[in-house]
Image (tube, rainbow, N blue to C red; front, top):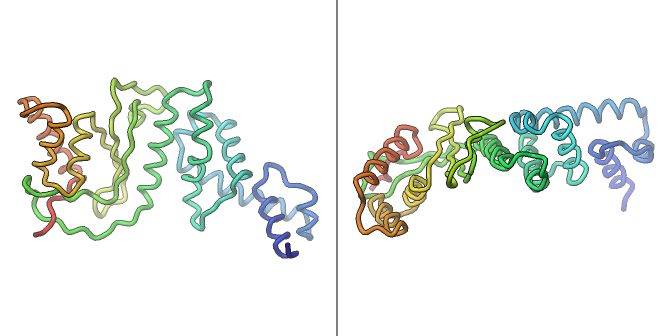
Length: 248
């Protein structure tokens, strides 16, 4: 390995290891105190970015446990991205399995981390141009492309410390409305989630409803089903999750 490559590796270890090694500081030459100041600046920025992306997770875990997870991620993998905001998702990928396996943490930690991660990623998504005309139930739906979905069993969007436990998995939609920067969350129960998934494909919304009825083992819809479907569709349109139908 070349001398330059060795120096680059020593520099990375100096920044990202839990404690900088004397050998690495010596290899970098110069004033050790200045290198340590630089290390502190780099780590401070990264720690702040990850807290900014996962503020409720950090509160739930506590400062010591959250900071330990960040340190473990930095030492084990180091940031793999050119974009600093993406370290939040990298941290989640690295730390979530350990948090899930930790019996001292509440069971809703998985839902909370994934929800905050989805919000963070949606905030950075580019908004592509979308063509849509007035909604036609006999045609497919145009779904907002600035959207992420995840299944949860706890309403972490309402209370991140002691959320309600759900009787069945719910589908969470995390999205931005067209032309806006604010991030919204909309939660669907099992039937609503089935409808949303059916409407997210190339078939007409009417055919999507028929497919959902078949999944539920029903020959025809009940009045309650129709009212629930109409309510879900109206909400999705109002919330700009369903943007209309594609142009002819």
